[in-house]
Image (cartoon, rainbow, N blue to C red):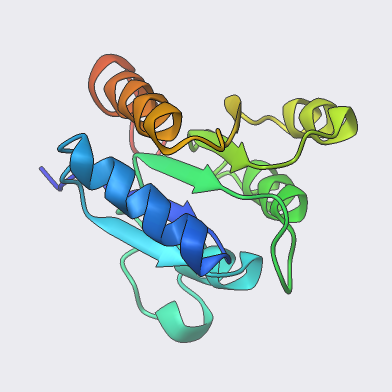
Length: 147
């Protein structure tokens, strides 16, 4: 069985570091793939561009998706994931600083599984990541591969 991969889609280096530190502090030792924009995330998931030839039968257990991304924004990434049968059931958690109600509504309309606003306080962020990891990587039953 393959390690449960987490795809972190985050363009802000500080937020990337903070998220990786929070995962590490919570002893979430899964392989973390970081995509720094929406186009890179889609390339990884669909095995195109720099990821051409990647075994796309091995998909992340969880995608942590920021909304405000360069090239292709998070909502468009989510829309493309849900439109493709290979990734339509992929667990996606929006992890963003956006407080805009329309981002929350649109994310759920596009099929996001969870929407979390990044806490500003580091201790609160660590706790949020702990709960996220516990739920999505331990308790949740993911869709069968190839479903």
